[in-house]
Length: 406
Image 1 (cartoon, helix red, strand yellow):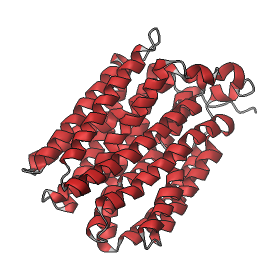
Image 2 (cartoon, one colour):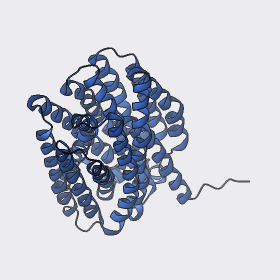
Image 3 (cartoon, one colour):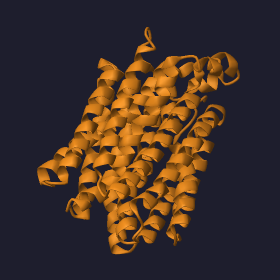
Image 4 (spheres, one colour):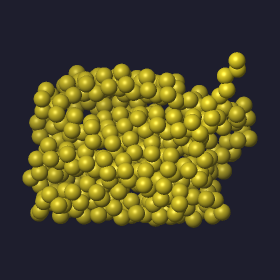
C-alpha cells in the first residue's frame, strides 16, 4: 500500500513545535549568560567591559554565521545545517567548562558557541517556519515558536544560577554542553525538514529568488537592516547587564534571576498573543506596543537605583516581556512577508546577522559606559535611543511596502 504524505497542516504544526522546543533550549542557555556575567564580574574580578566582550564577540560571530546559515538552508535544508549548529554549541560550551582566562572564554563562548548560535538562531529558524506557514498565519506561527525563547529563561537562568552556586561556573557550562548534545542535536536533526515550497522550486532558484542586486535600491530593505541592527541590541544589552544592575541596586542575585525567569514566562505568553495581534492588526502596531514596553522597562531600571521594591521588579518583568515578545518575531515576520522572493533563508539569515551585530555592540557599549562613568544611567539612555531608532526604521520599512500585507 502506498503511504500518503502527511497533510501540510500537520507537518507545519510539527515544524512549529520542534522549532519552539529548540528555541526553548537554545535561548534558555543563551539568556543564562546574565548569571555567568555577574559571576565573572563579582567572583573573578573582571571588569564589566571585559566580561561583556565575551558576549559581544559571540554576537559578532553570530552576525557572520547567520547569513551563511540562511544561504545553506535554502540549498541543503534544515537537518544538516542545524545539526552542525547544535554540535558547535555543545563543543563551545564544553570548551567553556575548561576555560581559565578571559581569552579562553572568548574563544570557546565567543567563537565556537557563537557560530553554533548563528546557525541555529532566530533568523534561520524563522525562515523554516515561514516556508511552511503563509502570511495570514505567519505571525501566530512565529509567535508560538518564539515563545520557547522566553520559556527557556524560566528554566535555564535559575538552573545556571543553582549550578554555579552549588558547584561552579565551569561545571555549569559542562552540564549545558550535555543538554545541547543529548537533547538539542537529536531534536533538530530528526524533527525538521525542508519546506515544501523550497523542495518544489529548488531546481529553478533564479526564477524564484529574484535579483539580489535589486534589494540594494529599495529603501525598505535598508530600513529592514536598520531594524535588525537596533531590534535586539537594546534587548540583549538588558539581557547581559540586568542581573548585575539589579545586584548593584541591592537585589539578591537569586531574586534577580527569579525576576528574569518570570519575564521569560510572560514573554512566552506575549509571543503567542502578539503574534495573533500582528496577524489581525498589523506588524507595525505589534512592534510599537513592544517598543513602548521596552522603554518602560528601561525607565524602571533607572528608578531601581533609588527604590528596588518588589513592585518595581514585578513591573519590570512585565514590560521587559512585552518588549522581548515583539522584537525578533515581528521583525522576521515583516522580512518574510515582503522579501520572500529573495529566498526566505537568505533574507532571514541576513536579518539574523544584523540581530547579532546589534546584540554585539549594545552590551559592550553599555559595559564601557558603566566602567567609565561608574553608573548604568548613560548605558540605559543609549538602550532607549536604540529602541526609538528601531521603531522609526520599522515604520519606514512597512511604508516602503505599500500594497503588500504586513
